[in-house]
Image 1 (cartoon, helix red, strand yellow):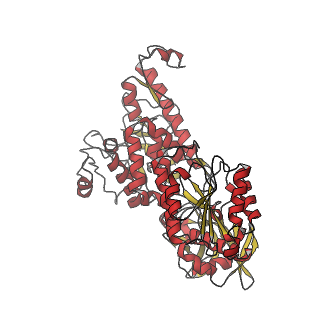
Image 2 (cartoon, rainbow, N blue to C red; image 1 turned 120 degrees about the horizontal axis):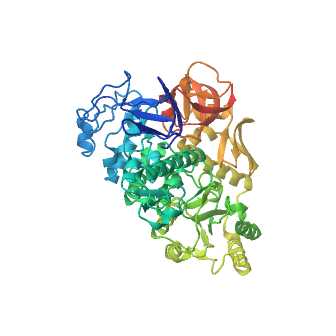
Image 3 (cartoon, rainbow, N blue to C red; image 1 turned 60 degrees about the vertical axis):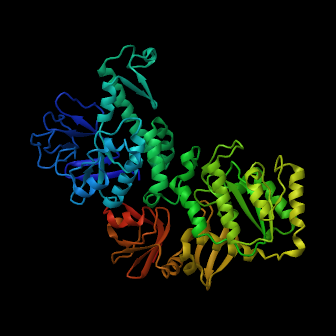
Amino acid sequence: MGRITSFQSGCLDLSTPEILYISGKGVEPPSFARAFISDGSCPPEGAKNVIDLLPSRFFDRAPRLDTGIDPGFRGAGPAQSAYEKDFPTVFSSIDFDAVSDIVPVGDALLLSREPKRFAHFFSSLRERLGPGKLVYAPGAADPLNLALLCYFGIDLVDPYGTMVRSSLGQVIMNGRIIQSESQELERVVGIGKDPDHGAILKHNLRQLESELAIVRDAIREGTLRHLVELRARHAAWMVEALRFADLEEYRSFERWTPTFGGPFLASSKESLWRPEIRRYRERIETRYLPPSSPEVLLLLPCSARKPYSLSKTHRMFREAVRNSGIASSIQEVIVTSPLGIVPRELETVYPAQQYDIPVTGHWDEDEKNIIKHMLRWLLSRRKYSHIVAHIDDEWEFLGEMLEKAGAVHTGGESVTRKENLEKLTEMLRSFGDDIPKPGWNQRTAEEIRAMASYQFGEAYQSLLEGAEVRGGFPMVRVLKGGVQLCSLVPDKGSLSLTLDGGKALARSGKFGVEIDDFVPKTNVFSIGVTSASDEIRSGDEVYVHHGGDVRAVGTARMNGTSMVALKRGEAVHIRHHG
C-alpha cells in the first residue's frame, strides 16, 4: 500500500509520503521542512503547505484559516460507534466517509501496541477509503517504524514520536538506539559527548528525514517490502504487525501489489508470505493448467541465476534431458523456496525470475511444508507415468513422499557431477519405449496454454479458443485465422495482447477497462475511466473499451479500484489502438 502521490488541494501541494513538521509555541520546525502542521500561534514565515489544527480539547484556539484538520485525538469529539466497537483503543472523532482529503487516525500510536488491530485497521481503512484520500497518523512515526507505516498505506506523519524519543535521551542511528550517556557518542559528528536535548533532537530529526528519503526511494524501486522486513526487526510489534498483515489481511494487500517488478531478496521468515509470493502459489493452485502430454515429471533444484535455464547448472540438466531422446515427454519442475515449485514454462513470470534467496542447504520447516504442499497439489492434478527427482538436499524431506509416488532419485552428493548427470540421462532414456513422444509444436501450444491460464485464469479460454501457436521459445506467437492475438514477452514472462487479442479476451468479460466515448491515441488516464474489472492489478495486460467496442490494449499502471476512484494518474499504458 506504500505509494508516492502528488496531492493538490487548496493551498496544499504535497508529494507523499511526507512529514508534517510541528510549528507552534516553543516548537520550531527544522530548516529542511517542506510541510507543516500548526496550531496557528507561530506560523512559519513564508511557508507553504501549512495545515492548521482545528479546535479540539487540546487546541481550543481558532485556526488562522477556515480550513484545517481535526487531529482526531481522544476527546476531540464524539467517537464513531462502529469504530469504537471494533477497535476499543481507537477513539477517532473522524467520520471517514465525510472527510474530503486527509483522514487522521487519532490514536494510531495506541494501535501500535496491539499489532493485530493495527494490521487490520489500516488495511481495512485503505479498502474503505480507496486510493483518493490521504491517511495521517499523528504522533506515531520515528526513524525506526516509518517504513512500516508507509507500507500500511499511511501517507502523512509528524515528528512527534521522534521528539518523544529525543526527550528520553535516545539517539537514533541506522536503526539502533544509543542512550545519551553512551561513551561512543563522542564519535558521532554533531552529537559529541554528553549531548543536550537540542543536539539530540536535531540529530534525530535529520535521521527521520533521511529515512523518508530511503523509504521514497524504496517505493520507486519496488523494494519497500524488503526494506520493511529489515526495519521490522527493530521492534517485536512491527514483526507481529507485518505477519498479521501477510497471514490475515492478505486480500487487502494483494490488491495493491503489482504483478511485475524488479529483483528482490527473500531473506527472512516473512518473505515466505509476502503478497506477490503468496499470490504466485495461489495462482498455481487455482489457475495454472499443467501441460497434458508429458508422461515424465523431472524435479530439479533451483539456481542462483534467474531465469534458471540461463544458469550453468540448468544448462547441464537440459543437455542431459536432450541426450535422453524423450525431451518432449518430460515436464521439468524446479523445487525452491519461497515459491514452492516453478514449472519450467513459468520460470520467467514474476516473481520466479526476480527472487533471490540465501542458499545454505538447511531448510526451514515452513519452507519444507510449502514445497511438500505444492508438490502434492501437482501430483494430484497430473498423473505421470514416471517421476524422477534429480535433487540433493531436498530429498531429505521430500524422499518419503516421492518414494510413495513411485519416484526414482538420480541426485546425490552433487547433481552436477558427471556420473549423476549420466545417471539422469540413462534413467530418462529407459522410459523411451513405453511413453508417447509428442511433437514440439504440441508441447509449445500446451506451455503457452499453461502460461495463459496462470496469467488470465479462466479468461484464457476466450483468448486461445480456436487459435494456433507458431514459433518456438522465445519467439512464440498466437494466431487465429492468420491474425495475431498475442505474443510471448520473455522479459516479463507474460503474453502481450494485440488489438485483436483484446477483442478475443473481451468475450470473457475479464481484464477490461471501460472509458468515455473517445479513441485513445496515447495512454489512458484515470479521469477517462468509467469502470474497470476488479481482478486487474498493476502490470496486468488489459483491453480498453467503450460500450463493448474494444479500442485499445495495453498494460495496467494501477489496479482496477484505483482506475475508477482516482481522477489523476496513468491508468493504462497503451500499446495498440484502433
